[in-house]
Image 1 (cartoon, rainbow, N blue to C red):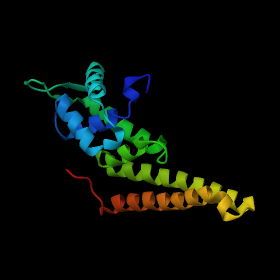
Image 2: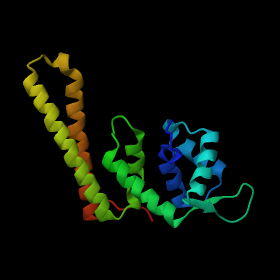
Image 3: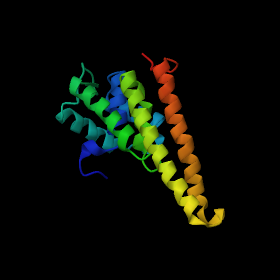
Length: 179
């Protein structure tokens, strides 16, 4: 569990759901469970995070009602976009769901920025692929003794190609975010 509540992996998808429409806490919880069941969102965590996001000025009460919905603030929108960039750049897609969630909100970034981030990430993945391929070339061991590295090399090759292809599709206008 992160020591800083704002480091919780639920923060990005919560902000993303609030980009779509204001929601009350239970509606956030319900939608998180529907879209991101692998995050295993807990009721108390979502309610606590809404309070934290409110105290930090990232969300604010919106209208009346009981429960009262919250909406994303301008600071919240800026934080949302910064989180997408940071997680696309830094999160490990093999070990951390943060990369997948950031990818889910790629359309919230300006297309040119999304293209740059994806191409940069593809190049980093290609570098990992080259390093592991060299390890295999120098290992002089039967494939079965390094089967996990063969698997990872194959996966990295696929991931780099997918990232570059997706960036190219955004750049060409073939892949556009929803309105």
